[in-house]
Image (cartoon, rainbow, N blue to C red; front, side, top):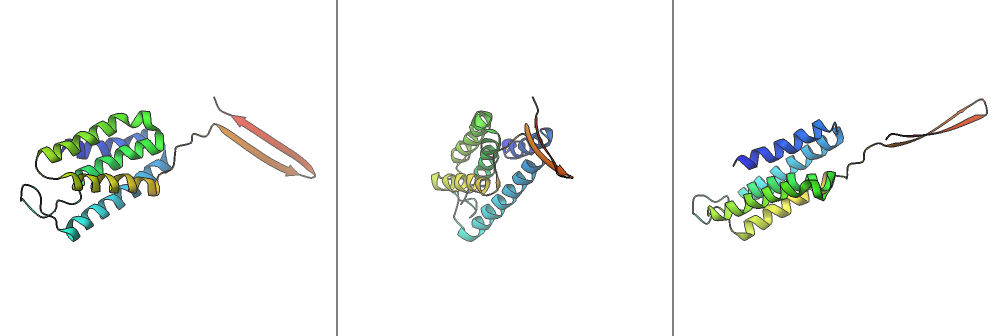
Length: 149
């Protein structure tokens, strides 16, 4: 359960550290739609867990949440930076099956919802290194180009 809370919190915190306001908003929208879809399906499908503890098995909320975080990092900042998050998400999914809380279909549903919610809202991060400007005044024209190293 620790990874369930730490991974999304760390992902969102990373957007604040990077001063990526657009990324923060994209993560938040993806997170909210992920949670709505996950819990909406849990109560609609009403699938019994393998351990018979309740009827909230499909989809795996742990999986959808952790894969949403990992896929956000992947989509926004690149695959290399997302590898640790994907490993944690995979471990979370594996542990849910080993704890007899989910089966493969529950996990697959969680992955699809988590990754899908990211791809709806998230765009790749583009740092502003270049700026092209244009000005005109009294028949004079000025074209400017700035590049930040």
